[in-house]
Image (cartoon, rainbow, N blue to C red; front, top):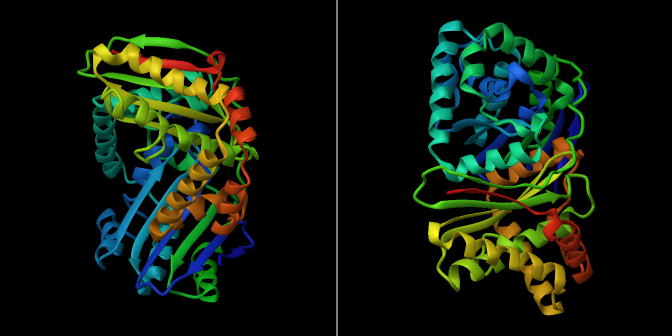
Amino acid sequence: MYQYHTLPNGIRIIFRQTESAVAYSAVYVNVGSRDEAGQLEGMAHFIEHSLFKGTTHRRASHILNRIDGVGGELNAFTTKEETCIYASSLSQHLDRCLELFADILFHSTFPEAEIEKEREVVIEEIDSYRDSPADLIYDEYEELAFQGHPLAHNILGTKRNVRHFTPDMIRQHLQSNYTTSRMAISVVGNTTMERLVRMCEKYFGGYSSQAPQRAAQPPAFRQFDITRQRRTHQSHIIVGCEAPNLYDTAKTAFTLLCNILGGPAMNSRLNVAVRERHGFCYNIESQYTLFSDTGLLCIYAGVDRDARERALQLIRRELQRLVDTPLTASQLRAAQLQLIGQMAISNDNALNEMQSIGKACLVYGTVDPLADTNRHIMAVTQHDIQSLAARYLAPGKISTLCYV
């Protein structure tokens, strides 16, 4: 199903051929906000913005029109461990997408005037983010959980840092970290592997560089129970704990556990216990974030102020129920089939598929076919779920942050 190739300079390629008129393509780079410290915090996100501001071949307006001008879409995002530049286009324009990716990654000039404008854009993004407590609480939770480590700081950085970034600082960070050994190209579209490899060799093959080692493993997750006065209309809650990392064999079982607790389905245990039975919130969800050397489970809810303590009790009760009471065979099977269905629906979107296989290729060098993933899910046992619950969800493992 998936085809692979590695260029001599270390860039990995993953591809699935389709009959669609639309191609989805991306370059993933294994660089994110955890690869920064001190005055460089926020640099990866700022680079993501600045890559579109001009190259030795194009002005900023030409970059934006290169894909959008033929009906496509060009975009990018930054996480704590990777940067992704991606595009959707007609399959006949895949060549121009790959050429543009290479141009902005290897030939960006970061013109002073454009950088000054983008600096204000990012500062506005930081301000707008701070106006959203439902988003801000996640970042503060990670700051508390990973205190003292680069994983702790906000992806956007600080306004102080952003104001002091210079083109020379940007170039130095890019050249030191955004190396071919850290790159993977992901494509889902109507072409052939042979043609894709030729295009990648043409546009990416002339560059070669090795990356430095990533920052040290984060400190042990620390327990906390903190309430902040934020003068918000709702109380915002996160209850969370440490979780398996990207390379932990328990990650499939923990994904299933997280989905049982607060996945997107209306019948998740937390949605039933807190929203459906009591009407305490509009939204409650659990989110499992995997990093290369640690993981994090966060349960978020926005609740009426008067219902906060009762909602926290109900959340803790559901966690304890997973620790104390094993799933029945029928409950486990229903949860397994639900997760398999959700993954199939998500993967039926070619953009989602392109992004998921791109990250998998970057992290693991390969992608499990959906059938293999389904087998791994069906192999999870009741004992696996209860053991993980006891290891991670017991009261002594849980930390809480509330905005009131």
